[in-house]
Image (cartoon, helix red, strand yellow):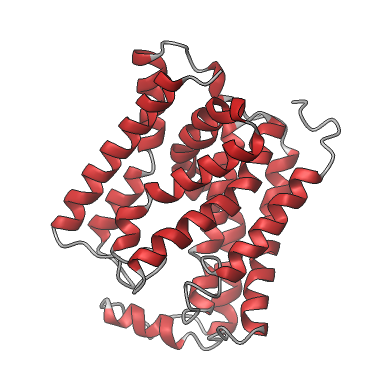
Length: 289
């Protein structure tokens, strides 16, 4: 049976708070340029915790059901290691195909990245050569930034995968996955309209973002349910963001956001294939902690 009251309360709090905060930011002149102002980036990072706040308010003040539904547990350690390796491999395939199909080429000399840093007033004269900088950046996205991004990712995932997904599961897995993905995508609409992920494509960007979050959501949904852990979902989200906004954006700065890279058709198709494969993979004893 669907908990309409809980779902409605959660979505209302999440969307009203998010759209109000981001709307005020946008009205102040904020745009997602190549290098957005620091204050705006901090606000966007803080907004990632709105779904968690909405979950807390819903389960404590409205439905009074407690946090049992959210799978607020670590679960086994193996999927954390597995996703830390699998997700960079997924990105390698996505950007390898982007390059193969001629949708973008790697900027090995980091010409665009240097220009971006210099436009922001940074001194790039002491920057390590690309042959050293790129491996260091990639290593950081494997070992350091997933933990930082995972903190903010958990802010979203306690809501999307911890609360909303279990609430929608009585509809069946396919409908629940589709709804969570579309809702997650539309939640990003205000910042997408001002350049996030799809600069120059505000309307199509919202549609593509919803397609990407739906495809990516299949993988995160499946792993979350299989291991009964919303903390794992936050980790996966963090690993994805570390790769998506790390070395690959630096190395492939000219990828058309609708066609190549993570946000384009290439990325959406690869994520969809991976998600469907994980769905079909036997669970075995993976639900044990």
